[in-house]
Amino acid sequence: MKTVKESEVQSLLQKVINSNCDDSFNKLSELYEGFYYKIVLRYSAALYKAGLSKEEIAAEKEFILFKAIKSFNAKQKTKFSTWFCNYTRYHFLNLINYSKKHRILEHEDIDTTVTNEVYTVDKSDDTLKYLMSLLKSLKDERISRVYELRYFSGGRKPATWDKVAKQVGVSTQTAINLHEKTKSLLKAKVSSENFFDFV
Image (cartoon, rainbow, N blue to C red):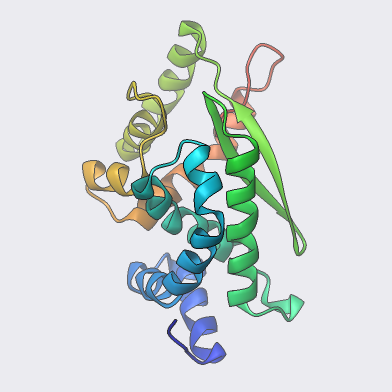
């Protein structure tokens, strides 16, 4: 695993947080790749049993890194490497424990505690039409494309972020960022007993 000064890590983190810098994100991805695959080895048997392929596990790295960066609080005096490893472990445990068809995992962070929520995709035609109409109404056409590829492409599982990014023509971080910035809007719009949040 590569070693780097904590000050350099903090500088890269700030560039990603403040300006969504792809170069800094990719640098962090390289730096923490070793940490990621060390944890993968620990959970690989259970992850395979849960139905994830090697390719899908590898593709989760960027999403986990993005979420770890956005939720990291430097004021807690915790090294980012520690936070990232803990976030990765929780993510894998959630995938293992809740790996059921049509379920998508999402994490929310409270202070330094990582907790999870599981959202079930409602596959009814009315729900899908409503969600897609909301997405299509947004000015940035890339957003609806990201959601369509990720969740509504007809596959048994969500498309990987790498695949989504390539088809939209953006970086992986940009694809995830487009997804994340729209999530609160969809949750606000889809908020009755008849609809389940799915993002």
